[in-house]
Length: 487
Image (cartoon, rainbow, N blue to C red; front, top):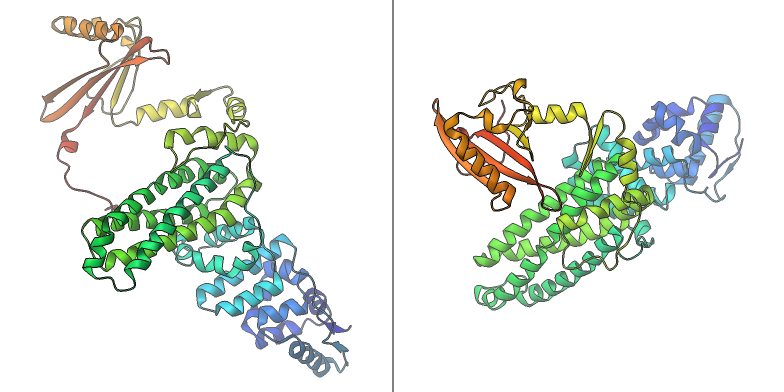
């Protein structure tokens, strides 16, 4: 056997098993090979050229040392060719994931960026955006806290930036959700560019007089910039749920946490501009600009390409369907892009024992449990004034029994209430009213009783919904509660 850059670690250890102990003693990084997972993945495909990158040892030195160890243990002289070119990057998907995770673990341990970039170039060279999402997902599944991944998220990207920047942003037709996201990013960059100009005029240590001259402009820019929240809300409520179906949950959680950081900074910036909190507000605005630009980079080089590869046209149609309800930042879709809406898939899922609702599919059991666990009592009366349903909650405010089902609602109340009940129904049916509210005190509790007209999409009266709720404790609430206080 000749030792050269292309010699496989697996082949070497099969012939000379004692070299495992030597490699581990030579560099702590080789201890990874003691892991069964690493042996089955990285060990099977990595070459000595790549092993030198893993261990941080120059290739010629590693080859000569291995040859010397073999000679000492076996008496054999092994040929060494330190000039032969190194092999191609590791292509095995599992091996690449293990190597990527090891690079990020070392990053979190404080290993220098230049060392890790060199290791990445030697082992991986080019990276697919979905590999980063999967790597972060696996790290979190193996116990790395989401907060820790979030803390160094920007540094993760820095390791791979050279490879990511060489790749084009995904190309999709106008009106496609990704196309709209990228239009919004261009608008955000324009506003950030204007913010940069104002901050440049203020300089590193602005005085109050200079800030007052720019305060109105800063206020307008920050107010416009705050519309980015609609962009983030669409990601969180439309794109992330569909990605989760494909197992991408960890990276979405990290990105959502970064959205919240930007929201906090935006709120602080608004208050700082309003109250002229110099110099803190200037620092906040600079942080905001950097954070938003970093988010744009992560979206267009990692999130969007990953989503484009994973999601079907039907799933993109489902993403597109809900966008109008949330809204857009600064711009709207450029075209009425159409794709499978996902309705076919949902209808297929609404088989026996399931109910297809406007915004989901549930089993009959789930619908029943949901209604029974609501913190209010519900009764429904149809357009013929017949009781069709009441929620059998554990502690109903007003008792109901199955005998009420199918009964005229007028007959479910005492005679003295008949006229009032009939008036509500008549006004609802005529379209003159849509709601009636009452509140009473009973047994030391404050109760709210509300009646709502139920109408179909054409506005036709289809019944009345009665909602009763004990609001005694709600009325006592003051201030804010943002944290969980369970023991």
